[in-house]
Structures are given as structure tokens and as C-alpha cells.
Image 1 (cartoon, one colour):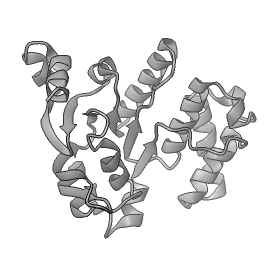
Image 2 (cartoon, one colour; image 1 turned 45 degrees about the horizontal axis):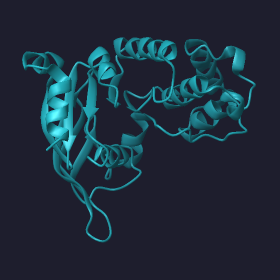
Image 3 (tube, helix red, strand yellow; image 1 turned 60 degrees about the horizontal axis):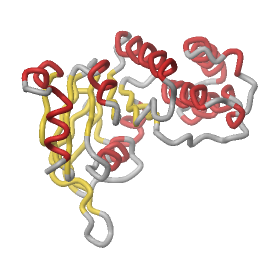
Length: 239
């Protein structure tokens, strides 16, 4: 089964600006999928459409066969988003942030409490559970945002630049967390400007430019060409 099926998806904003044009993409269940592209390529618009933040102008997007428009509630419950921005209440604690997210998805109180403890332990946040979000380091904020995305145990996790601005040590810690999640059966879509991150984690890679997929294949397919992933990416970006 596909975790994500995008068919002839397009998004045109007011004024005629077309962010995505006839994009089709499939992500298999259990995959660790890398989505690459320069700024303005359409990555954010695609992610926002998958997660219901904006509606497609044309085509369809399905998450485990649930249409993101027609089956909005069911589809949204299947996906978790870890955005690049720290879009959390700066005065809330990690416990409060996770609890509010669980409540949003209708989790009962006892189930929320149990899940919060699991996530605080998994992401080494127990010692910071009562601190305000604004008092946390950048790396700890990243962990909270990722834990929040996992609060309702989504089958598909979308990570938008999850290690931007963190040091090398923390980046490797986050890589380990993500690999463990994928091994547990969570399908992951990763966008990153760190090519070594994509090469390290992802099994399948797609490069998009001007709202279209211009190259897609397994990680090993990219290795077959001279220069590998970096060469393929730079060739596309320079066009």
C-alpha cells in the first residue's frame, strides 16, 4: 500500500501564481523518503496540501487511500508534521504542548498521560518537562516539536528541515531517533538542505523543481551516476 499518493496535483494562488504544476508522486508504506528541491520549488506547498493547511487547485492527494479533502479528518489523523519553524506556545511546557496536541486529536486523558511519558523518555526530555518552551535550547525545542508530531502515533511523519540550526552532535542524535521510528514502521518524508542527511537516512529520493518531479529513484539509483546525489541536485538547480 502507498502511504502517500499524489496524482496530477497543482496549486495556484490568487493572482495566477502557480506553486505546483501537475505533480505526481508515490511514497510506499514503510519508506524513508527524501524530498529535495531549491527554495521555491514547491516543497512547502506540497507539504501544506498533504497536511490540510491549503487545498489543492487540481488533482488529488491521498494518505493511505484517504483523500485529504474528501476524507479530511481521517486523513489528517494519519499524518504528523514537524515544521521547520518553532510554532509552539513559548510559555508552555513540553508536557502542556504534548497534552494539547493529544487533546486536539481526541485522545482520552489517561491515554495522553501515558503517551506523554513515552515521548518524554524517548526524546530525553524528562529533565525538561516543566521548563517553558522559550527556556529550552534550540536542540531541545527540535525534540519537543518532533515529539508533538508523534503524539497521536501517526502512520506518516513529515519532517520539514528537522535539523536546521542544530549542532552536529544533536543532528546525529535526531538521526538515530528517526531511524528508530522508521524501523518501528512509521513512514517518513524528509525535506532537508543537508544532502548528507538525505543520503544517510533515506531509501528513496525525489528532486522537484518548478513544481514538478524532475528525478526520482532509490538512493542507489543516484549512486550509479557520476557525482551521485550532489551532482544530480546541482545539475537540476542550475537549470
